[in-house]
Length: 228
Image 1 (cartoon, rainbow, N blue to C red):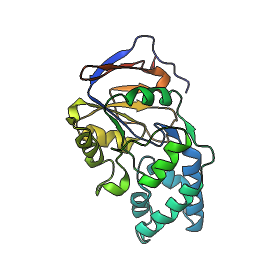
Image 2 (cartoon, rainbow, N blue to C red):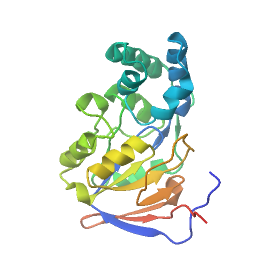
Image 3 (tube, one colour):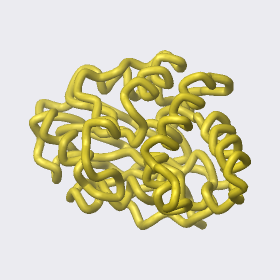
């Protein structure tokens, strides 16, 4: 990132925290790109087309859009097996461990577009816990950008959507969280090939976050990216 966080934080009060996984808590970009390159090569498809639309979405949905003649369910399983075996280069987004450690004292969860076993592998690889309330792609019928996953996360935490703050890094996830009526903080650790939708704040990583428990949830101090 070339932009630096501003010196004065923006404050949010909420009752629950919802985190996306890939690109938000864990940098899994290397494994994801390698899996898509492998798959694209096997089907003579330009991987750049895939990477333009794939971030934050289940592989089956991407395949259905890119190659509608293929069995998107079976092809998605092939990519999943490839990703489960590739743990090279999985690293924590800076500061995520400290924020999650604090979040465990209250209501928080992970809402991800990957299946549960892959989510477990990636969280454990960087030393993060797997919350009992985790929402994964195999537990819902409509993936991001549909709000279903976020609404299920709020329901499991017993919190109204408007009292949740979501950390997301992908356009589909941001759109889904906004559609659910939640406030969204974009984690812009990577520069994606597409622009992000407007969010309530933008951070480079979790070193820009102050998290304090309150009687009814959380007080968040966000040092947003300086656009000047």
